[in-house]
Image (cartoon, rainbow, N blue to C red):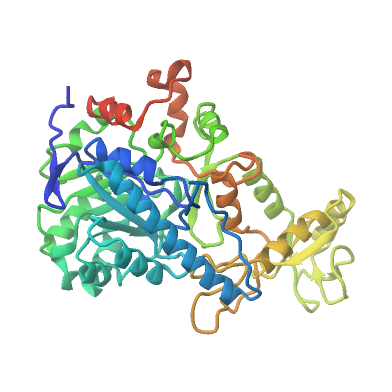
Length: 468
């Protein structure tokens, strides 16, 4: 029995359920999960972010970087990215067997995003129905999609962001606008589009924000046939009953990022799946440690707590004696030109006594205190940078012009490529970044998952369609 009011939409020339699989970053959404989602009649999403390739025996090829320079490693990364995504799309398309639709997801802020997107669409012609894209302002998305004859689905967190994209670029190719994804910045997992005007600690109700988005779309003349996809915090459709068939909101679809993590086809390791069942409300943290500079939401595990503690061990300094900076720092740094407040000198000496003996400068004129082991890891990771972002706060890499952001590398952040590859391929779930939406605690509460039950994607989609 299908939940009342929920009807198929026409997408890519065929009827599909208005249920979209969220395209989760590095190897957390692949051909198996997205192909199965499409086969169940929805829109599956292959993540085209450093996707896995396979050898002749079907084993995952580890992404090892052999080049000496960051620029050369960046070229390797682009090749890996295109090869992997094309492989994933082809396999997903075969699994879907003509049902549903296959989208790909790219982050505009990933290194070489445009080259990777064009490379994948060139080599996977006829297999991809649409491209979802967020993390930044992807102005060029519409032009690229139109060139390859696929839909584009921008991910935005406000009506204002959509208006800017529309006026600058999308109004020129309205016919390829497949949907607009509203990703709630307080509820969604992964990177979030919180603006400086919004308070990370004060979530806003998504309904007025989505209503404002539809009003903006109408004011700009966008067709009523273009759905808005609600992403972030969606669990039971029955909780969204007043969104379905609502003339204020127009056509609505729903995106599921967190729930498909716990399916048989989900490619994430078993330890990650097991951990999802244990989460309580509040266990997912909206934080700013990502080297992208964006807010992001992940499980508050020992890895995140380590970053929180590291950031608490920092003091402001100046290069000359000025204001309250009246004493010289005598721990953690080489040289005498680090002036701090007397109370901060005491704090720094205490940290040094606890083993945090190394002071590292940050781009905000502070010094953060770490252990010798941490310092070694940070510096090695910065040295190994392969340019996976268009701008990286952690390594100061930039993927164009002079290949540097011009800012000091930030030791309070981390190598996101290293940790996401590690957790997706069996690394310690406590010592890596584990992205999840804020509703992940519901795995523990939802009777569907009791007695360790793990559904297939088809069973999950069927369950969602009932309203549960």
